[in-house]
Length: 327
Ligand code: UDP
Ligand code: MG
Image (cartoon, rainbow, N blue to C red; front, side, top):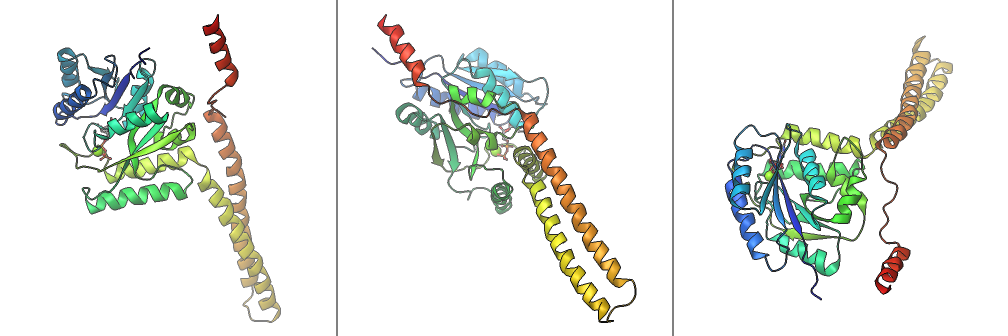
């Protein structure tokens, strides 16, 4: 019996990308034809228009008319890269076996798709990350800010795959897993590793943006980092608790020091009591804030309603399948 070919959906979020879309679609189409033997003819290349103000949607519609391998999703307005990506993935999830997400600007090498597919088909990986090998094509500033970004994120408790953007393959069941995360503040790079399953990475060289401008200037990147940290971890709150505890401990030392100074007559009147109250109260306030914060952090994580587990395999289920076949 011939095994069924994989239905592959490539999901590309696009925001004001009229300059790159013709080239991107051309290259993706070539890749599609090249993979013809391997993937099902039901496979699609899906562009998600994230409320672009230029001709992006018109171009997508035209592509779809010319070649049915192209498809498009139009969002009601601009919701940002992460939301556009999620919209695309959740929409295609019921049609595909695997979905690969990538940016429209051709910075990610589309040739990595072959290796990603192989990891899925031959090694049974459910999630394959595309990881940039080097960033020598980016400007020093972009490279520096982006690399600091990953390091900072990790120390703040938002665990992400180093040098991995949103170029990744996800199987149908990984997408199902992703749909169990109900958070509104979405940071895919932090959430996908939480899904679990067998994962692997594919390495590629990062290229320059084909045309147009980056939609992630420093300002957006900073807010992206803030978003990632505050939506994934409550570490900043814990730090406040630690600082509070530290200040409180210092205040005890200060207390001893001022009292000793007071009795030795080395202080002017009023100094000792002021010193002790400033440090003592400051420390206690910070400590109390941290403790209150801990509870708020718990409430915060609860309200996300994240899945507590995702089942990989249930052997009993397999036995049923087997029985069905027998009878
Ligand atoms: N993008 C989007 N909505 C936005 C901003 C960006 O869908 O509000 C898309 C954009 O079209 C591109 C991808 O997200 O396909 C990544 O953006 P960009 O290449 O500008 O980011 P960079 O690679 O510079 O970090
Ligand atoms: Mg880019």
